[in-house]
Amino acid sequence: MRSAPARTRVIPRPRLVMMRSVGWLCVGSAALLSVLGVVVIGTVPPGPGEPNLAIMHIVHLVVGLIAAVAVAVPHYRVAQRVSYPLLAAVVFMLVFVLIPWVPEAIVRPRNGARRWINVLVTDFQPSELAKIAWVLALASYLRFRENYRKLVGLFLPLALTFIPMGLILVEPDLGTAMLFLPTLFAMLIAAGAKLRHLALVMFIGLSLAPAMYPLLEPHQKDRIKAMAAQVVGDDRYHNDIGFQGARAMTLAGAGRWTGVGRRHAAALITYNGLPEDHNDMIFAVVTCRWGMLGAMTVWGTFVLLCAGGLVIAAQCKDPFGRLVPVGLVAMFFSQMAINTGMSIGLMPITGMTLPFVSAGGSSLVSAWIMVGLLLNIAMRRQRYLAREAFNFDGRDDP
Image (cartoon, rainbow, N blue to C red; front, top):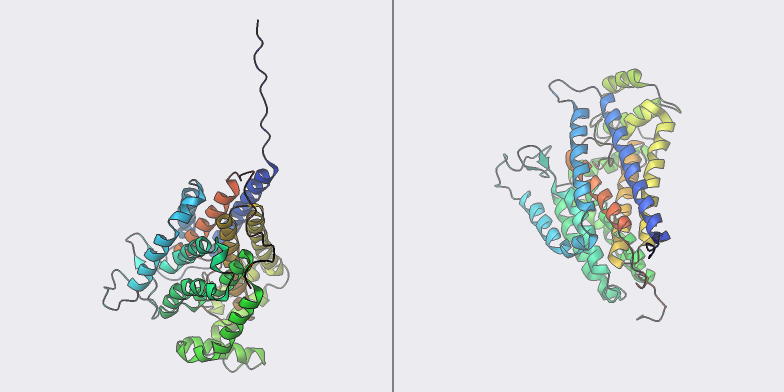
């Protein structure tokens, strides 16, 4: 009588196990920040006639989680195949919001900016989706090293960057536009672009930067002036163009090391008069309620999220799958650094949300889509015989 064949135990690959665990670390970090956002937004007293923003944040969080699952299920190579059409569709939407004769029932201007499309149940901000589409398209282009190892090969990545970046600047949305260049350089460095070429491009960009100042909107110039005055200790703009920055620093400093608690923080927020306290300036509310301890918690959680994304990139052999996490991490870290920096007076105010924490439907949903992409790449089994991505031997073209 034959005995039943022994069952062989399949041992998961160490690389796959590490990537999966790190992918869930990114999800957990994003979830912690999102829950923190609900609590912080609930600290801000709603104005007369305003909806409960904490409840709205929870609703958008649910939508974001559904979107994250939707992008995590299919293989990330599907994102590679649709990256260029997706970027083209997003560029069309960025142009659409700028068309002056589009009815306000469809494109709703706010404070002179045309950034939102009315989709009946909410307002959709195409620039948030543009960040993701651009990272995917750029990663799809950079997966072939002959495209960027020469100086002339950097022109197309720059063009891919300046098209959505320029349209977003015209809206105007300086904060979102500022995220593209650091992300571009991070992805080029990760792909193996030559540092001397990048240094030359950076030198040219810095040389042309002063010429861009006249193109800024008046309120953007005012914020730069207020920041410059603040650095030298000039407080003459505190009740004028520097009011928002001064109020944010006052509120943040009130928290000291451990914060003042919920009730005291709510009173300070009410009488402080900080504009955009639930949105762009949410980090000042965090530091007021929980002090430096709360600030370090936010920074530490973002570091965990970004470190997890970099580990996913390092463990992935596929060039596209390696570059996408680098771009998303650079986007997250740049946005966090700029937002928290402007809340504590280290950077001029540009109008930018803190990912996962600030109130804002498009921002929260797009952030969770980015987390879904990180988890997607982390969960994919790597091929044993695949060649390591971007393994240069130093003998390629000068």
